[in-house]
Image 1 (spheres, rainbow, N blue to C red):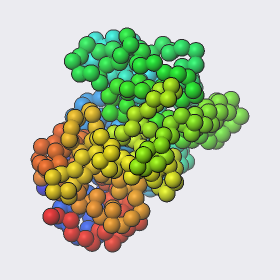
Image 2 (tube, rainbow, N blue to C red):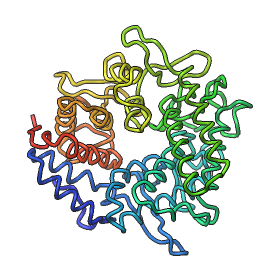
Image 3 (cartoon, rainbow, N blue to C red):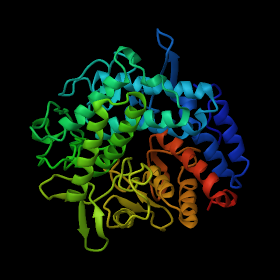
Image 4 (cartoon, helix red, strand yellow):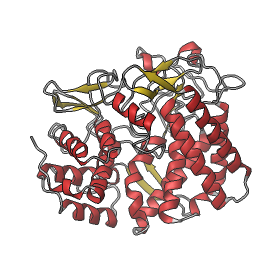
Length: 451
């Protein structure tokens, strides 16, 4: 089923050529259709690209069925196109516009996770926090700032275009946004108190608001960075979210490298590296627990008092995704143990179909027992085993509910019962997986996967 619109929002010559090249190598007709629909879905349906008043690129990327830009989602949605940007000037300019837009967003509010396209309305405008007209939602999620750094670093690596780092970006500039990002992370180490961020929502949904009068559950300062919400937008139980702290270590070191390139000698580089080292040491000291079956594994959340939550959520950053984010290698002991744990029934958010053919990680965000295709994709992206990757492809091909696209989640025994028919992150991430398979496991493209 072809799900591409007749008039795409943005079209890339390089992306279209890649679709044609890879599709020609895929034997399974359904897998071929899924790839052709999913890989360009961000460009086809979610990109609003234009020039600002000074003629600079400005790109607003919505998540799909929610007309707002998440720092996390927008980065992840364009990430698979970065390898093509050096050979497609229009594509590079579109992504540069997103780097600039994210810079603007951070300067508006480094604590916000989602933004309107300029001043506008939001269903969350009455939240009990410092809302502004430009904000769609103001949930403090550490990974939001990390994703903005990841995109800037990835864009620079792909294109060597330094224009996005100019001081005049949205009048204040990328450097000012990065200083604000690092200061916010340090503030949220909570060494001298909880900081200025509070959040509460009038809701019957427990995970949509924070306890303790909007401050979150108590934390003991140990060097980790508090994140009041997970990448699922659900409230943390224990505020030191381990995958996001790992992500912060990687991102802060990437930021320091960018500063060395574009602002040599700037003190923010040393501050970023020092913060990364401190968080890394704190993770080693406070985030590893000994599981009775799996040995030393990463906890999902900790509080610095010795309490830990053992689980994983499908949303990235997750424990499963750590190698994908550049945190570690797949065969490192603690990660390997953690991976076995999160892909087993010992993880309370791991589910499987009654016939055992489909399994994956879900999220409290969509309740039990829904599986997120994203978790199956990340399982494949963090594996080097052809048989395991092929198993993941089969599960994905047979769980689209006949729609020709990926979704947020689905019921394992009835994939036609899914949430979010238009979820561009999952679609584009599937395209990223297919490109990796084509490059590293090309024999898998010749297999049949429909049951």
